Length: 92
Image (cartoon, rainbow, N blue to C red):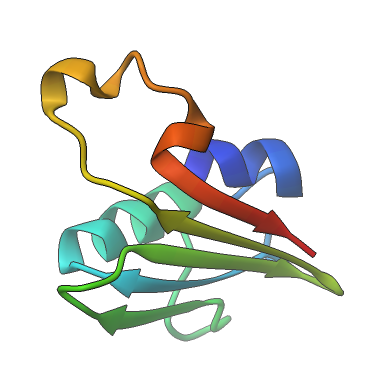
């Protein structure tokens, strides 16, 4: 998700890039760590715990990128899959 966001929205550690994550805490931890986004000072990270969803919403100004996990593949085939097979990617 972070690599896709970096490619489509620009450098993911920018102060004007906001991220909202819904999913397991480990997904929130990873995306917060990679983006250096904080919950406060300046607030640009939001997390909602969910066992049913894995989704990140990235926003910068009027741009918005939504990345949703389509499946959780076996670790042996994960690295050979295309982004489009793993994620629903919507850029507005």
